[in-house]
Length: 575
Ligand code: ATP
Ligand code: MG
Image (cartoon, rainbow, N blue to C red; front, side):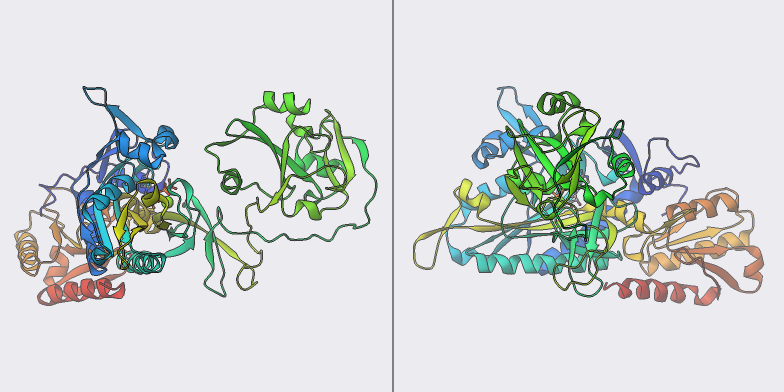
């Protein structure tokens, strides 16, 4: 293709609303344009990257026996009512009515529709395992669509659903997909890590892993063990109580004035103590009910774990007004002592505390010398906090390290969660009907494109890994007025096309500086610069975008040189 003909509207300015680097660069490099909040148009360069990711995904799904289908985007409410998710999916679901007032949604995911297909068409265990997948737009009315393609309201997902006769076979399907995902993200040229994860709204009981592309800008926190293979999303990572050596001789409860001290920091300073000696008391509204949540003062409440304890739809901090009604004080002086009308849940470290400090439910006062169990009753003790770097690995005990990640895929062992509700059964070997075991496996194709940029860029633009690059090579003739330069460029272009190299020629009548800037911004892995000076020596200049390295290559050798480079880079990540 010729740059003069391609729709690559590059910009020098960064759009103000683009907060993350992938969004900024995809906008500036002419990959995407916004159509509505969280809804984007993919221009030719983006479309090519999407096709490349999709091809890798297809090959790996097919290799595991996946069969590609296309399910409808418009889904009838009845199916979602059957699974019970119509009522619980909430505002994230785009809902619509047809002219007869029948209710539908735009598919945020496809467990219901695909299970409906299978229960209607598959009769016998002999037809299993069945692995059905599609690559298609998904619709989620995200509360905060942001970060460009990272969190859109319309985005492209590959979703595969596995159907098996029993739990053991389902586990095998899960293992196949886990392996396929490792291969996919390796072949994309990305640095990633699979982590244990929380099942969230999709549910299921058999376990789940997320695949995280490692990048400092990632929304997800990860802990991993440098010694063994343990890795988990911090949402999920189980915490063991860590006992801090404090004065273990219990003293009596004592009311102390702490005027103006409303934060952990202020109380700690005022009473000359440490945050780990404080009981952090938070009032949550869990669905409609107020609940008192306790963690040590140096810890953070993990709302995902809290949600799981209650199996709740919503978990939110109570308003100042609600706190005041319950505790008769400002938020900064809240504590568990005397709160007998309300459920108190505590993190597993709290009952181990002695001589702790907590709010006295009286403005300007705290208690000292508090012993949980003696001075107040805890209704439930559970792991409620978020793990921190340096805590021992739950598998081997070595100190854990932390990293940031972008969730690009997730695999779920669903068990019979959906098939039971939707009554999806087959005849088993014994001639009796048995409920299907399911798994579901998603990859965010457009998010993977964004994640690849978050991991590979510099101040000049994108540095595409070879397997995902929209074009592998760009040829830049520096001066279109020099016939020798134009001829050499056109000749090389024709030869590379013949060799099926994905090549662009920047034939625009622009200054070389403009072409170089655009080439760096778009991020083609290899740039061939052809100028009169080097041509005199019989050379062209090849620049590697990833490293900035420059080589002069004889004109007659450059086709081979480029092909060897491309093949080596593709092979290095398993292509
Ligand atoms: P998140 O926690 O980021 O909202 P999720 O866990 O709800 O995502 P899944 O239901 O597991 O997402 O969907 C499978 C994959 O689809 C995710 O791993 C992610 O790559 C992608 N994805 C999910 N939501 C979005 C979105 N709003 N925009 C782009 N990609 C998305
Ligand atoms: Mg997920």
